[in-house]
Image (tube, rainbow, N blue to C red; front, side):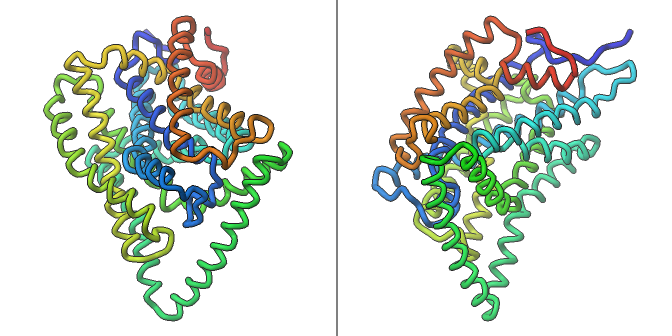
Amino acid sequence: MSHKIVPTLQHDRIAMLDILRGFAIFGILMVNMMWYNTPLASLISDNSIWTGTADKVARFFITFLFEGKFYVLFSMLFGYGFWLFLNKKNSGGISILRLYAMRLFILLLIGVVHVLLLWPGDILVFYALLGFVLMLFRKVRNKTLIVWAIVFIIIPVFFLGVAVLVSIIPEAKEVMAQAMIEQDTFFKSMISDALVVYREGTFSEMVNMRIREYLLALNGFLFFHVNIMAMFLVGQYAARKAYLQNIPEYLPLFRRLCVWGFIIGLPIAAFGAYTSMFHDIYSPNVFALVALFLNSFGAPMLTLAYVSGIILLIHKGYLKRLSQWLAAVGRMALTNYLMHSIVASFLFYGYGMGWYGQMPPWLGILPVLVIYGLQILFSIYWMRRFRFGPFEWLWRSLTYMKWQKF
């Protein structure tokens, strides 16, 4: 008897996986709302355009509880889904790796379009590219996965540590100081350009600005994107252990992760939020190195605490209605992620409301709640009537080279 590789059907889905995806979508929107509305150069430098007290309180809150925690969760879930996909029933000479490579290629194209037409903060391009790297780890042992995950987490710390050591050399210190001055001038120019272009520019000028900002973001590859690879591996490890399929069996583990995740993660997250707002973490110095090292491990710990807490509450019978809402959002996570950018572009760019650079972080929390609330309603309505979200349907149809039943 042969099996044809087909998209995952509703009755085969892992409910907790969808719930956690829905939860991740909320956290990602909370973080990204300020990024939609603020020049990239402002966010990755000390040239903040948000300096009011209420803005600082909101930024601390978002950085403390959300930033760096939910892309971690989404990346873990991507790694989990990778392993599930590779273990689909397969025969008849169809290569599951070839199919997965096509899936990644289509995701790459979606990401490129996302960058060009909507938002330079896209993560899909790197998910696709690093997904190809993830395929190299499909046969390694479980312990090896964790070792490599730690290696990828350490890489940013290593390179910043090298920069700190180099900065001690007097000649190098002078060169780096001059480079920092030039970089600051460049950042200020980028901020000024972004504020004008996104409010008043033509669409082609906005596309050009998005490309400039995206290329600027690439400079942070060794300090951000390699962590995505680490979380992919952690997610694959969790999938191999089938943690979300056998929750009752792993309840003691989830309890430990919840307790220790909060004990370790919360103080480190608070420290990270404080340092990002009141210290120079954008130049090589010992303080920035310590903050990066702690955050590299503290953020995933807090993420695991969030995940474990949700799993434990749902297992005890709490959050039943909320879990249904989250699952609906999570079943069409790609659509909801892209809808964030579509709605935000209308709110902030000149061809829409033109509010770019004018909605402070404290006020930005309100549209997050409104947009996500509407996404819950839309997702419930849509998934009661269709098998896939709109972009999920397109992604799957192009992957399997056949229009899927809608």
